[in-house]
Image (tube, rainbow, N blue to C red):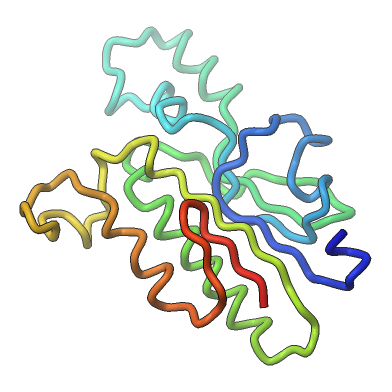
Length: 170
């Protein structure tokens, strides 16, 4: 529908609709995808020795092989892994997605062509691991409050936003 209206489309964040190439956002109407994650966040810790010290090396090798990290790609091409995700990366996944979203908005802001953006945060799955800049910043001063980490994504855009998953339409 958006393609017939000549919209550019962008996807960033979690995608739980399949992990094979035919299932990727760029094969379902999106022109571009960035920082796309396919699994519940715990999956990224399985191959991480800092998180699972007692896991056998055989199991670790297996999980490292089958678990895809952050993906990106463009329509007409294939998605590709830009980096593995480890436990240490989980706190900043949404910060990274927000940066990609803001970059996309800035790069399209002066164009007359409309765009649609779907920003899908992952941190509600791992709300006890806030990005470093948000540790201790809640009213309770808790180190484990993440909701504030989403506010900059909304505050920094002047584009229409619906919140739960940030949705931007110019």
